[in-house]
Image (cartoon, rainbow, N blue to C red; front, side, top):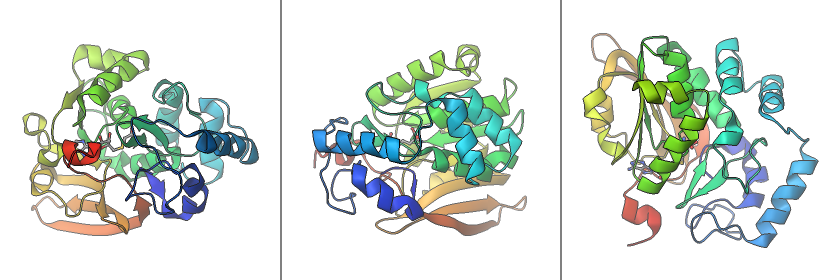
Length: 274
Ligand code: SAH
C-alpha cells in the first residue's frame, strides 16, 4: 500500500494492494505484477461509487483541495498539469484517492500522498533547483518535480526495476513533462536508489517513495546544504520523515505523519526471489 496515510488505512485495507508481509490486514493479495483477484476488483469498483466519483484529473485535484490535502496553488497547479491517468495502468481507476498496483509488487502512491510530499518539498522545488526521486515507480512525482524546477532545473528519477523505469519513461513522454525528458532536464534511470544518483548531486530536494529501515547515508551525503529530504522511515510502523540540512551541514529531522509504503529494498527481495 505504497504511499498511504495511516488515517486512510481502513479504506485501503479493502483493496489489499500489498503482498505479504506488507499487507496489514492479511486479506486477499496480489501474487505477481499487479494481478488483481476478482474480489479485489469488485471491492475497488464499489468503493469508487461509494466515495464519490472523481472521474478526471481536475475533479481529483478539486477534491484534494477540498479535503485539505492540497494547500498551495503551486502544488495544485502541478497536480492538475500532470494527469494521473497517464501514469496509472489502464485496468485501474486513476482518479480515486487510493494507491494502485503497477506490477512487480509496487504501487503508485495515493494522490493525497503525492500531494503531501509535493507540499513538503515545494520550497525546495523552485525553478532552477535539482531534485531526486528515489523509487520513481510510475515516474509521476519525477514528472511533477520536473514541472516545478523547470527547464533550467534538473529532476532525476531512479528506480530499480528496469521494466518500471521503461514504463515511467513512456508515461512521462506522454505527459506535459515530456519536453523536459527530451531536453535532458528530466531523466529516469535504473539503479539501486539507496545509493542515490551521485552524477546529479547535490540535490535541493530528495524524495524517497519506499520505506527505509534507516536513512541511507548516501542520500544524506547527496543532499545540498539548505536542502530537504522526505523519506518514509520504519518497518511495520513508518513515519514520513522530513530531514533538513542546514547551510552548515547539520541535520534536523521531524515526522510529518504515519504512513505505509512498500520497502526500500533489493530487487530480489521485492520480487520475492529470496
Ligand atoms: N512514487 C512512486 C512510488 C512507487 S512504489 C509512484 O507513486 O509511482 C515504490 C517504488 O520504489 C517501487 O517502484 C519500487 O520498485 C521502488 N524501489 C524499492 N526499493 C528500491 C531501491 N532500492 N532502489 C530503487 N527503487 C526502489
